[in-house]
Amino acid sequence: MRLTDSLLPTCESATICTVTDDLHQAARELLAARTEQTVRHTAVRQLATLSGADRCEVLQPGENGLESRASVAYGPDAADVPGPLETHRSILEHSFEHGTAGLIDDLTDVRSASGPAPAAAVLDRPGYRSLLCVPIESHGLLAAADREPSYFSGHERESMRQLAALVAAAFDRFAWGTADEGSRLESVARVISHD
Figure 1 (cartoon, rainbow, N blue to C red):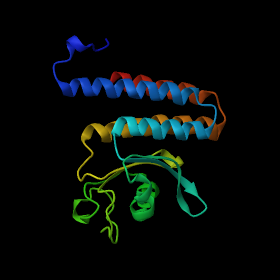
Figure 2: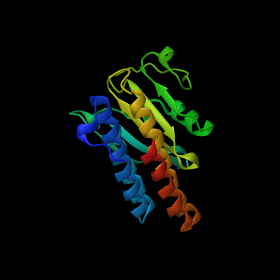
Figure 3: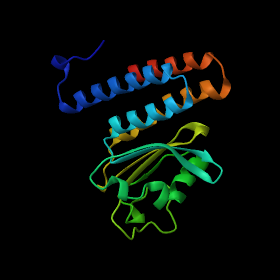
Figure 4: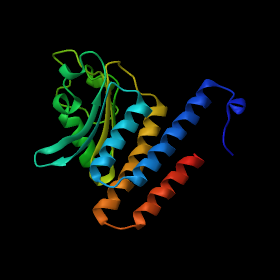
């Protein structure tokens, strides 16, 4: 059964319905992707839509550790604000290496971390305050950062986890070169539609 506006009792339910629609759209676009670069661009665009964060990135392993392969940043000084990979690489690499999500509510206060604590997370200049990163299996991380402390709610965290599963399935199609991964992506999309 598909939810309609007349069946939605609260704004929170409407938000959940919108997120589900956004994830379905992401699944369709990722299933249709013909290149890994299209997967990256689709992932970062959908991450920005789902999270509303000031900066979103797809990070993948490279010669020197994690590298940003696709990103979007919003705000009047977005080009001048260093990204989380530049300021908090250790948090992101720890999350990727251990396959765990990382959430830091306030990057200026390491005591707020519910993920790996960095050696020094105090920023010397204005920048992002909240950070949420979710592994894309062995393919890398989805990372979102915002200037507001405690920006990410349970909805963003869960949506990001589900998007990461879709992105991993899309990357698997290219890594393994099999058509069967299309059916894996479709099955993940079916799971999302029933959540």
